[in-house]
Amino acid sequence: MARREFLEELGSAAPNGEPSPLGSIRQAGGKVVYAWALPGDLDATRTTSNTFVLEWPPHSGTMQEFPEVDRAGWFDLDAARRKLLPAQHAFIDRLEEQL
Image (cartoon, rainbow, N blue to C red; front, side, top):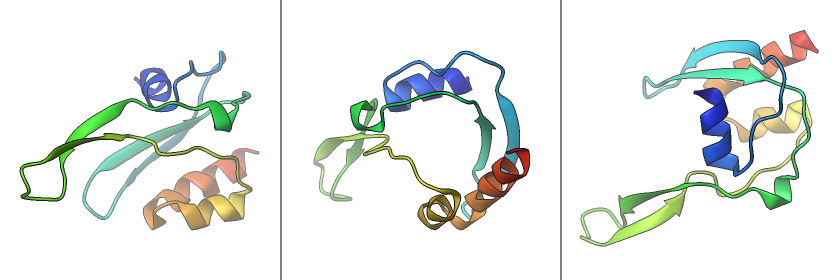
């Protein structure tokens, strides 16, 4: 499932290899997120995401299409923590322990 999500959200196949689990977290809204780490190379400037349709603005009756991922980039661990939701910081901490 994680490999399918990688492909759908970034537009390229996940690298070959055995993923290293980073566990799961529960976000403030209750959603449980699982993550894995896998060494590889990705040109973040060439990512293409699948899209979803949402009524926007809310209650307007207008349906619009949006990408699941609007952009990708490479960041050091501190910058990544600033960009993620607070509950997701645990993934960076766990990755740092593995490195």
